Image (tube, rainbow, N blue to C red):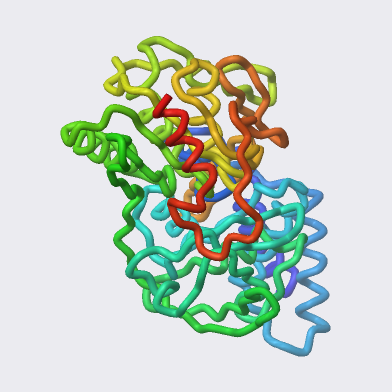
Length: 400
């Protein structure tokens, strides 16, 4: 009886695993995940099992049933079996999502945000999670979280190089639930408990600077940002803007199509915007399919936390000489992850393509080098227009 039950359980395990790894693709929509990844959503069908793995897992199940003194949680065991199998790939961007996690991942990418309300940078090599900004009207802002705060523990689990991807995902969650974060701010360490809720996200902040210079800060490239960018630009242009600063500093990415849509507002029709290469060396060249609407001088501000879709955007503008890039070397995240939705609602994210700039400049592990390198002063406590050396250099360039 025990053996029969084990076989049934692990046929389910292998159904999930093989579905994730071998299934046929039905539909696809390209997106680029926040802070560190580009993704596409696909629905995939079911596949067959693999005898060797089934046998090993079934044997372990039998031993646990016979020897383990506690209760076995079948659902959690199945989930952890698949998570562990996928983690064995050894790729920092590859992960398995439960149905709940999958819905959160998709909603966030599409701009439907439920959570504590932070932009964060996940450094996979150092095993750190740094808060870039707490969103307006967010639980995080109400809890007092600030830029450059380090998240060292999530629900009591310490952030390390080995688990940083999984831990960063745990910060997300369902509306109405809470998460405990241990924060390090300088020498100070403290814990906060924050309730997750639905947040109306604005992707853009804009204003007019002296000299009729339009300033547009793009906080992310999530769903809807291109439309919002266009609306803000047209409003500033109607107010007399004669040049434009686009600030994508600390913008960790978002939806690839949103970055492409924004590039089409600036780059010439039919010009190459992005080159993607898959594991077989097959190239996909993405070109502009629209006439540009922005014809004024542009400066783009970048820094070491400008990643993924931000690098696609800055790289294309630099290659086509459509903007002057000012700041510091960008992050260097130039690979695309495909996020596949499985038949049970769960998902698998894995690295499937690498991208480069229109001039075939490599981005991954390299980044975009600015036309003009400008560092921020190391002793700045609060950034203002006056002490923002990168912004001031951008203004100087546009006034020439």
